[in-house]
Image: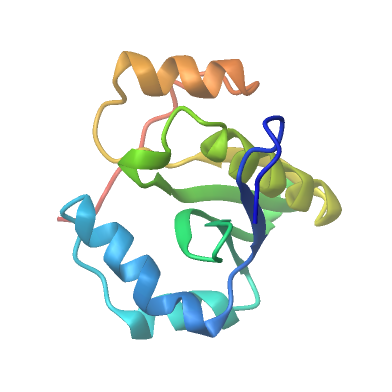
Length: 147
């Protein structure tokens, strides 16, 4: 199959149960330990969305997760993008932007009133620039964690 020059060479779709092991492998590439059971749980969870970017052979090359829940003080749903990962060989090819676009569209369908991105550790300049280019602003909200 020949991919037209204007085609990105990937598709974005909802995750399926068969994606669990490949997504665990993508996380492992980044030094993140995960298990297929948890990925499957997320795929089937009613307040989670997991979206996959797949190459022409339907091999996962990236993914994004959105958790959403009702919040009293918002009078509606709040959404958090917990994970966004693209394998190194597919970075800077529009995969992350398309995954983010798909989740933002889904958040609108769910009537999410506030959408945030969870960053583990201080975000670097590239990450800040990426999310700003996608319409997000860096928040000064404090996060407290139980030790």
